[in-house]
Image 1 (tube, rainbow, N blue to C red):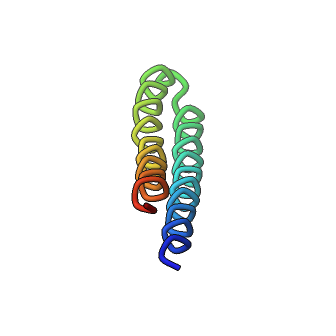
Image 2: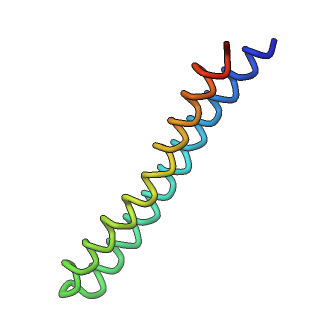
Length: 77
C-alpha cells in the first residue's frame, strides 16, 4: 500500500509540474507577443528577458521530475 502511494505521489508531482510549466510558458509567450506588437523596436531586449524567464519557469518541472524519480526509486525500498 505504501509503495503504491509513493508511485501515485511521484506521478502527480510530475504531472502538476508539467501543467504549471505549460501554463507559465503560455502566459509568458503571450505577454511577449503583446509587448512586441506594441513596440517592435524593443524586440531584442524583450526576447532576452523572455528566454531568461522561460529558463526559470522551466526549472520547476525539472526539479519536480528529479524529486519524483527520487521518491519512486529511492524511497520504495
